[in-house]
Length: 302
Image (cartoon, rainbow, N blue to C red):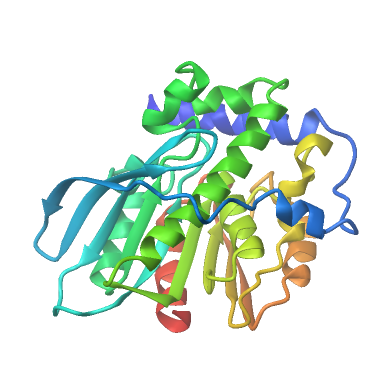
């Protein structure tokens, strides 16, 4: 049943991002100063962080957190930190779930992201991980009258919802970086990000508006031209700010959202210290073959 739902979502996503739109992405527009302001926020507002239940595992500690986002939101998430010597500052990787998932996908077997396997491998490698519920997803479904995140893509008149989802969640990850900066167990010079599908687009946007992201791995990015109201979120605009930035772009050979012509444009447009493009034998929904390369990229570059 889960597989059927994923397949149905992929069909709907393809319709949303392709059939409802005939104009190609304007690659000349880029991220103007005005667009960057779209992702700004007031850094003087207190995060009002609450640390909730803590889970002690053999090799790491996981804690549920919640903090103030924007537009009067409260943002739920998890942070997990490897156990080690007192005073150790760990590199940290932000995890962005897909448009049909939630923060729980990083702790569940068989999720779209293969999240549990990735998170566990990163923790075992000495990385802290932080993940949030994107707006309208997970326990934040009440923000959309409990209509699932899936329906944001299933209905062609949901451009405003999609724009709010992308903008608000990106800003809230910026605020999550502020939270990390206030901890004594995180190395803020070694911050990475990983995302799949819509989450991959968010990770690319975040790196473009926030220089604290040093390394990215993005899998199954939605590269096909987006409808004009939400074209600003197209990966073609990704220009990571960090001078040491590196990007691994992971693409399924049969991913309808990533035609090779578009993939090459996005890859060429990435002006970073190091980058790599890898193709895999899957469509938009990745199989586990991407995991080794994703973990290896962080080990090499973070």
